[in-house]
Every structure is written in structure tokens, then in C-alpha cells.
Image 1 (cartoon, rainbow over the protein chains, first blue to last red):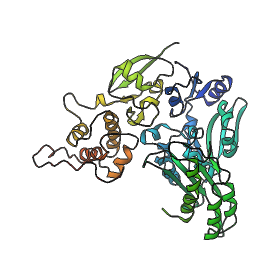
Image 2: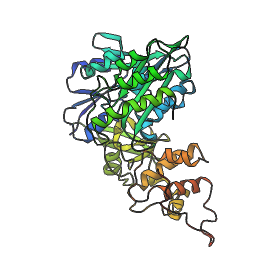
Image 3: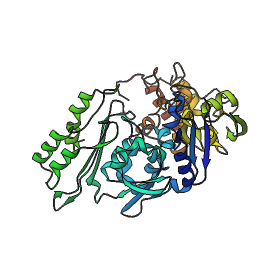
Image 4: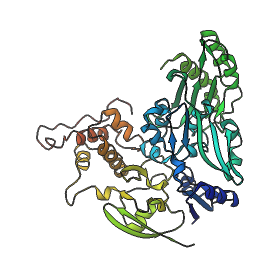
Length: 272
Length: 175
């Protein structure tokens, strides 16, 4: 069914169009919206695009990193100063998908997709959203929990503090097919340490609920502690608390709950 | 519903078509331009059979909104050969039995071309990663990887000689 395509020069105009039309969807890289159209999704009547160059800006020079919503995974992989995010971007799709898929779109990718959003959640990113009444920053956790209601806003960028050390941020995606496959479970952990103790621990999980979620019970067991056998064992035991994985073709909910702790242990102990 | 005028470079040739709103590049190429080399596999971004190059980068034609290629250069398998002469990648695919049913081959060749255009001498792992988005249900991938490596090393010379022994297929190496 033909749809109406509206292309705007600025993100503000695109956001206004999104909020004024109920069945409008924003087209980023196309890997979600075109997929829905090919599948015969009749809920999409209007596609909104923006050619605004600001959406493709990437600022990774300082300690605060800002990635425009239109930045592709291939672009992240080409950015040397974002080396800690290369395992994340590289775990998504094949090269063609990485040339198309964007950071902004990944925030809307349903489970088991959305691996980059898992990393952004562990990094405590804030998401800039342009709505009908102007732009605002919101914590990514708030953004993800209200994701279905965000469709009338336009994501402009995600920003976060660069981890203090390469070792502080760790990422692991478990897939049945390598090098390309959707997640059985995805884990991203940010463990900043101060005087040998973990402070501000973030553990984010993908494919463990309809959106990426934080394993808050596991975070609490590590907070203020050194990463020793006892604290890691407590985190592993609490890893699946509060999660709501589903059965799909890749894994059962039961299996996901069983293995998430195993992989959290490997991630925290630095095992391959 | 109004159609939109669209112009782009298709294999070094200018084309102009009228597309429906929301039309993807794959149906545009196949039904309006008449280029049947990109294949429809899944329409979901999972199989890679529709891989084309847009401004030199591999893209999935089925997930590309047609009007986003306005003014850009689209390369498909149809433009790979030079007149009657096959591209070295195509010859290497023949020599290495890298096609059985052939449905994935156009996408495989374009994904491989995207790699070799940037990295003329890739490692085996780099080849595996380059074709990771392309599914082949026949060959077990090994002959395809061998073919891309052979084309990369300029290995076309000598392949036609009597000393050529085909590489072992379906080795236990997992993909």
C-alpha cells in the first residue's frame, strides 16, 4: 500500500509533522520502518524523514560524547576514539545493516534487537528528544520505559560520559550464529571504580524484557564493593531479578534466565 | 496516490523512474529499471540477497526507501562484468564452485565487492565478516570464502591450468 513520504530539511519540522499525524513513523536507516512496510504493516500511513545534517553529527573528542540519532553503526566503527563501542556496533547485523542502521533507530528496536541501546543504558546516556513543544533531554531509562509513547517525538542524539578506563565498560552479546545473529541475551556493564571499589555500577541487559533493562538487584550487590568472588557471586545470583524475557525462536525465557548469570560472571571476571 | 520522480546513477548510467510512495529500492530496480540481479529473499534485512552498493557502500535494497537514492550511485551485479568479460570475483566464484542454486550469489558478489574495493587483500576473518549478512543455504560458505580470497590475491591466474585442484568443500570449520 503506497504511503506518503514527507521529507524535511530540519529536525524541528520533522518533529512537528510526527506529532501532528497519528500514523506517521520516522524513517532513519530503514531497518525497522521499511521492514514493517515490507511485512505489510498498514499502521504506517506516512513516513517522515529529515535531511538535517545535525542528526548525523558525532562529537567524541572530549569526556562527554554525543552521537547524533542519524549516525550509523558503520560510522561508530570508523571512529577511532569510540573504540570501546566497537564491539557493540560490530555485533549488530552484517556490513550492509551497519551501513544503514542508526543509533537513534536502535533505541526503538524491539527485543531481541537493540544491542546498542543496551550499551547506552549501561553508560547512563541521556536522550535528546524533539517534541511538539521543544527539545528536552531525558534519562535513557525513562526514555525506554515510555518508548511506545515516544513515537510522536523525534530523537536527536544520545550523550554520555566516556568511561574513565577501557576496562570499566564491558559488553557481551550471546547469539546462536556468529558473527551475525540476534541476541539470546546481551549484556553491557559499566563498573567505574574509586579506590578499588565499584561506584555507580550499571548492568544493562538486552533480550531480557521488551526493552533493554537494568539488572538493579545485581547492581546493588556490587555497589561499594571490590569485584571479588563473593560480590560477583551475589550479582550473578541476582542477575535475572526483575527481568521478563520471552520465548522466541532463539531461546526460551527459561533458558535466558538460566544463562544470563553465567555470562554476567564471565563479563565481570574478564573471561572470554 | 501521486508518484514521485526519482533520478539516480544505475551502474554508471542515469535512470529516471516514477516511484510509489514508500517503494523500496529493490522493487524499483527490478520492476521499473528492469535490473533483475538483486534478489528478493526475506524483505526483512536477514538474508542479504538484495545487497547493492550505494555510493560504494553495501546496502540492503529491500530496506532502502527508493527516493533516498536520488542523485546517488547504485551498483548492482548487472554492472559488475565488463562487456563479455566476467569480473574477477565472478570468475573466482565459478572456479571455486561458490554457487549452487545461485540465489544468494548476486548479494554475495556485491558484499564481496564492497570488501575488496576497500581492502584488496583481506584476511579470511575479514571475508567472513564481510559476507556475514548474506545467507547461503547450499554451499556451507567455504567455497564462497575461498573464491573471495582467490579473487583478492589475484589468484585467477593459474586457476585455469591443469595443476589446479579445487579446494576442499564443507570443511569442519564453522562459520
